[in-house]
Length: 336
Image 1 (cartoon, rainbow, N blue to C red):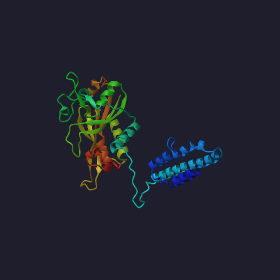
Image 2: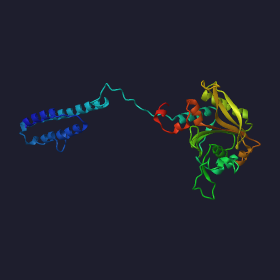
Image 3: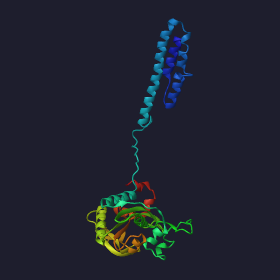
């Protein structure tokens, strides 16, 4: 029996443990409860003469401790190798760069716009992307023969029941102002962000979906001057204190008077030093829109604004192709 312990000790010391699998095999072979060699020797203590049992038990316990030490040492060594990159790491190679996710530039721009608007007193409301024809067009004073109703501009849902109002993918976030005025009495001061869809040819300046933010302010004695001041404050916060804006008369069915707003974009390479670039449309809410939602146009006035998030992001970051926002090119997204 004593010779058996010495032989087993030499065998344990000679074992090679180079992986987690080998460490587990070592444990089972020498310390396993059912078939381990050391537990098997413990079971044979009763066969020894009584005077030999204490010494044999002491030596066997020492052997058991040594086997466990070898397992612990191997696991600690393997853990250090893993943390250092493995046993075959080449320290002459360049380091591996860790990649982390980031917020999409459109989301960054939208979050910044909403942050500024919250500071100007606007709350946020999000409406459905699938809208009724009434909310998307009729309540916004679109006549039945208006070009925006044409199939070339609007995505209509095929499966809408014939006896119900046709369903469309909203072409703007303006239906949000209808839903808000249906649910809440003035005063109302709200921003409506979201995706919108139009059946347009895809090019560097147009896409089949994009993002808008709608502003609506309804109260007594709301004026065009208040609208202009809010837009100047928004533009200065987004593009800098020295930004230059211009308002051009325009037409939208749901506002009267209406205007489009351009920002001057300096370009040293251009012959005239830059160009005017449209960023949004706006105007005073049309009385017909108020009547559609049972708001008295004799008591209340209001303004509405619709701005494109993609256009804002393109101006802020010098991007000249809207399609790049939707290509999921990691080289582009990694810049943000």
